[in-house]
Image (cartoon, rainbow, N blue to C red):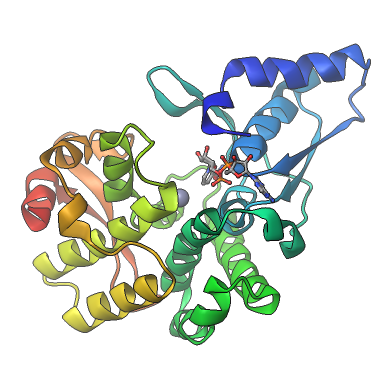
Length: 285
Ligand SMILES: NC(=O)c1ccc[n+]([C@@H]2O[C@H](COP(=O)([O-])OP(=O)(O)OC[C@H]3O[C@@H](n4cnc5c(N)ncnc54)[C@H](O)[C@@H]3O)[C@@H](O)[C@H]2O)c1
Ligand SMILES: [Zn+2]
């Protein structure tokens, strides 16, 4: 399960293995792995015999807190990531944090960025919980990890229930992702993990909020402090190359020269706004 395997050939393997076993429409496809495996098996299940049941058993922290829930499936094309896919909900998601014991530390830390995102979207209590649990989370403590996973799943499933196909509120889940994707793309998706990009992207979003007169520096400091304590990168200015700025806004969420941008304010008070790309880049330069 590696990003380079997230292609149609891997989907064909799932299809053909199932078809060779002569499964019928009562079959269930279960994805055991990280987000790559989850997205591929989800797509395969949604198309096999026009759709068979799907179950997800995520084994990375990112997949537990984010990708296994919400029903987005798909794979990459030469033109870009996740360009072909479906919305298809799993029948169950089973998270066992014991599986994380073999996950490299950096992968686990990267997954924590999405938990911070969830907490900031959710509430003051959730942010305060991660602040209390920060040391335990970096050490891989099971109870703290379960609390973070549960909070993230509850938050995500609530938002997805309101807007399954991302026409409105589901866009909130893109907090930190506009700039994060720009950083990932500028590094050819190799130099920086997704979660690291999201951490820096959330700091960038705070900066944009400040420029628009929405945010306060206390919130930026609080978020930066939490990300830093969790072992995530916070050195936005060192990473923001002009190349990254070019990539920002070249994505799916663009509307002419404006973009739907997620503006964080206090925990639980995040908003989506159309922001001019010029203004966005000016806030970051
Ligand atoms: N569907 C969605 O809503 C959604 C949301 C966010 C991300 N994603 C997708 O998720 C993918 C990233 O997922 P990821 O961060 O889980 O990466 P990943 O699936 O590539 O897994 C990271 C690495 O960890 C290995 N691994 C998995 N579980 C392990 C374990 N328990 N012990 C040791 N190694 C293990 C994998 O083989 C892989 O090498 C991206 O393709 C992204 O597009 C999807
Ligand atoms: Zn993400």
